[in-house]
Amino acid sequence: MANAAARKRSESGAPGPKHNIEAVRQEYYDRIAKHHMTPLWKVMKNVVTKEPVTRCAPVIWHFDDIKRLVMESGGLISAEEAERRVLILENPAMPGESRATNTLFAGVQMILPGEVAPAHRHVSSAIRFVLDGQGAYTAVEGEKAYMSPGDFVITANWAPHDHGNTSKEPMLWLDVLDFPQVNFFEASFAQEFESATQATNREDGDSAVFYASGVLPDGAPAHMNRSPVINYTYARTRPIIERMLKAGEIDKRHGARVRYANPINGGPVLPTMGAYLALFPKGFKGEKYRATDGTVFVCAEGQGSTTVDGKVLEWGPQDVFVVPPWKPYAHTALKESVLFSISDRPSQEALGIWREDTSVH
Ligand code: GTQ
Image (tube, rainbow, N blue to C red; front, side, top):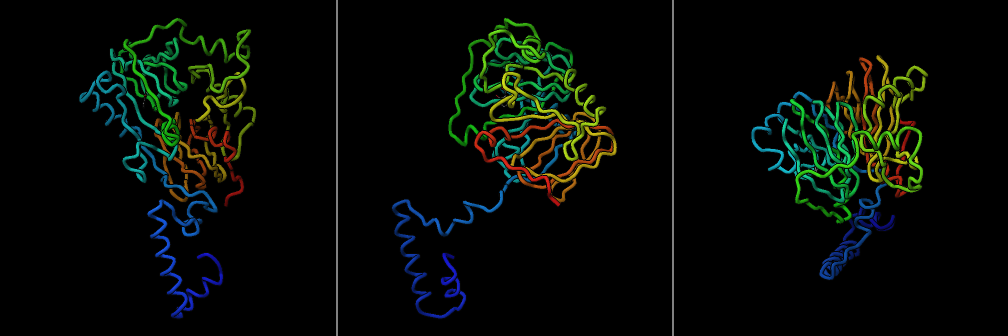
């Protein structure tokens, strides 16, 4: 309703001018529609909402289901034929949209011993968080990173990458990609390579040693909007949160938490996605929190629950769950627990639209 006078008129139910004006307006709306125009005043409150509105639902995928169903796909299609053998973790409130939150794709990829997922590149950035298995690799920009559970690996925009498994066991990891964001801008490109695997000219771990050790190669660029580090290993990151916990650096909401950083500028690892690793002491009862970024969490260790908008998500090792934008949530840990999380916060911060609320009740 456009204004108080009009509201009054329509509520009075009086015949005459009101019916007349409604009919006249409708005729006008129909006429302008033919010219691809429509009145803002009818949709104003839907397009400029007072608070964030999300289509995304809180949801959890338990690892026993993930593993059983993903393993089954191994008998149905090879990594080579599938290009990427991935089961999409699809938000039940957005079926058919290939996304876990409105801005993030999440999926679980499996590579069986001896398989290769062929080299390609795309505008979408990707991260992997290793769930299960040991010793498969991803080759990114000339570095072959052998991975272990809890490792956090990045594949930046347009970086060539292929995956392989020279170990004796299947490897499963969580993929999170920003392609809902890229496709929102309708700016996706992708390319396959002739050769299934790329030539590598660096040692496993070179990028972490060169860039993530408190020094930088002399002459390293001063600006870089994505991290030069490929594998942020669990072996390096886990002891840091342990030490924060010992030092008492425990946030009332987020536990003892580190942010994966780009060592060039301290910014996020990728311009579109940011990640954290948090340790919660046994018995932790977190305070409520909300922020405008939609988040995908993975339990790396432990057991606990996260209450999201009144819904209790009980998690254990390798379970994956989603917290939608602006829904209040709080973590509880029954055992000492580690949660990995990833969200679209860097995109929102770059646009100046990210908000948080640390006083939710
Ligand atoms: O590993 O390159 O889950 O291109 C979706 C698209 C993984 C990958 C996904 C991809 C990849």
